[in-house]
Every structure is written in structure tokens, then in C-alpha cells.
Image 1 (cartoon, each protein chain N blue to C red):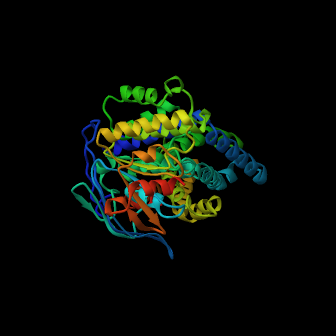
Image 2: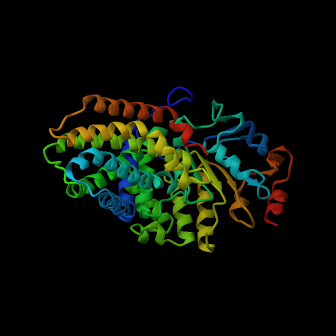
Length: 251
Length: 224
């Protein structure tokens, strides 16, 4: 798209292990008609932080994650990625999009493609180098190596979710956005996911996660932000107590 | 990543999913076959009448095929929110459209090439001597249908009455391309056959204008 948004045409193949990417929301608002999904949200997330977004249904967690992913354009406000300031989000910046990955409410996978084909499609779109090895390792890590040639439509909910997580991690993103990532995962799946998050956190990846209910993964968060009716109601980085916020969310 | 590479990846995905499911292509061919057969029974065409009405009926049948085939283009990206994955990928938004337009063009041309001999037999017209020119008209006309239809499929996907929305938008938007395509096709089926170069030029202009418009608004069309 010419003109309106900046467009970085980066043709070199992507190298794995992107450095962490910080993100700052400045006075972000999102309106749907008269309804405010987000109200003047200002939040600065440093590179390498793992932030748990907590709050009731409809508090704006998913909208904020989708704004960060560039899927929803804010009605007003600014977003900064690292040292870059972008008014409307990472829509036009190909280089930024390459460094952001998301696991959403839906699995973002094609039912008519196999597990391997889904990862291959994602890898090709991201121009990843060494793709066959990345796919092999990703499927093995997710415990899906034996089902690599099976169509996604034949997968159970938990397997689909593991593949969705493997897809998001394939590009070694600098910023990982997770919206209810443990949905459908069984006990083993949650343990694998928690280990994966722990490893990502050690590697310095910036993680922003929203989740409901008890979750071991939530306990890995270095910071919690509670949203209420689209506003930031509490932030552990600004005096609120992290453990009590996570306890509140779990209970 | 350049535009062509992004579009090629999307095209390969579209072809793979369709040839694996084989739902859209077979259904559309059967549907349009029925339309062409019913038209031939309704009008009981002699050769002279066929040359007069045939091209219009043929393109009307192709338009029906288009409205049936193009609807799922973006609709099926909704079931697992796969469009979000495409939008987050570091490719230009128009690459998504270009890949889908190319896939829809290919599917529609395939259906048309299958139906053309059936039409020739039922309507008693000879297409063999003008097959090359006819293929060019089919390509240019169908490119217009596929471009407009793919763009409208992206627009109608968020609408409440989306099944009705696409045909309602498609028919008026495609009137110029249908008239031009039918006229050029009629010229080719006349005795002796005539190549209407003005009509062909109109089709080229139409295609260029709609592809350019799609390129300019692609990012906005994909927004939630």
C-alpha cells in the first residue's frame, strides 16, 4: 500500500532469534460506534518483560492485543515499537510485522492443510531461512512430529492449540502476543507451554499474555496489568502488588 | 518480500486447499452446466438465434459461476481467523489480493474451458476457428470478474447478509465488463467472425483500472 503508511521492503531472509521488542501504547482509544473498547490506554512494556493482562471478559484485553498486532486500528493514540514511533500500529511496516507473532482466540491455521504445510506457509510468508529444520524442530517440540502429515481438521482441540503456538514461535519473534493461549490444552500441553514460556522469557523475548483462570503460565509474569472497561485499572509496575493481582485473576 | 513472491505463496495455498477439497470447482461446473442446458431448452436455439443470444447467455452463466465461486474467497479465511495470520505476515496487503485473484481467475477459466464445448454443441456454434481469440476474451473478461469479485468478497465478508451482498454488488459493478465481453464474443461467433478490437481494449482498460483500485485500497479492505 503506497503512501499512507510507511513500508519497509526488507528482502533479506529473516534470521531466527530476534532481539526483544518493547512496545508502548500512548493514549490508545478504540471505539466501535458509541462503545469504547479501549479508553486512553497508556502502557509502556520494556523489551524482555512478560506482562500478564488481567481483567474480566470485555475489559479490553483482546482488543489491546489485536491493536498491538496491527489487526485493529486504534481510533486515536500512538504506538511505539522499540525506538520507532508509529501512529496507527505496525500495519505498513513489513520489518516490524516480521518481529511480532500472536496466538489468538482462534488458531489461525488452515484445516485443509497438514500441520507441516501450515508451518511451511507461515515460514514462507515470513521468508524464514532453514525452514525445513525449523518446521521439524517446531513440530517435535509441540509433540506433533508423528502427525506432521495429518490435516489440521483431524486434530483435537489441544493439538490444534499446540500447533498454533508452534506456528507463532516459528519466526522467533521479538514480541509475542498471547490471547488465552492455554485454551484447549490438557495438563501435558499446559506443562509444555509453561516450559516454552519459561525458555522464551530466559531468552529475553517480550511477552504480553491474557489468560483466564488458574494458570501456571500466568505465574511466570514479571508484571501484571489489570484492565477494567477499557482502562488500565492497576499496574504492578506502578505500585500494585503483582501476586495479589494474579491471585485475584485466578480466583 | 516482493509482491510477486507473496502473491505466489498465497496462490499456491489457494490451489492446494481447493484441489484437496474439490468442493467449489465441481459444484460450480455442475451449476453452470445446468444453467447452460436450461437456457438451451428455454430458447430452443437455431444457429442464427444462437449467435445473437448465445454470447450474452454464456457470459451470464459465467457471472453466475463467478458469484458462486468468489463468495468463499475471503469467507473461508474467517473460520479460524486465518486472515489475521496473513495480515500479520510481512507481505504487502495487495499480495493477498493478487494471490486470491490469480487463484479465482484460474478456477473460473478452468470451469469456462470445460463448459465452452458444451455450449458450442448445445447452441450449434463453431468455436474451433476462433478459439485463440475466444480464449483471449475469456481471459480478459474473467480477469475483470475475478478482480471485482475478489475485492467485493473482502468487502462483503463482514456484512450481515453477506450471501446476498456479493451478487447484489457484483452484478451492477460488472455490467461494463459483461457488455464488452458479450459483444466481443458475439463478434467472434458471427459469420464471418469479427474481432472487435475496441471491445478488447475496453476490457484491458477495465482490468487495469480495477487492479489499480484494488492495489490502492487493499490495506483498508482487510481491516477489521
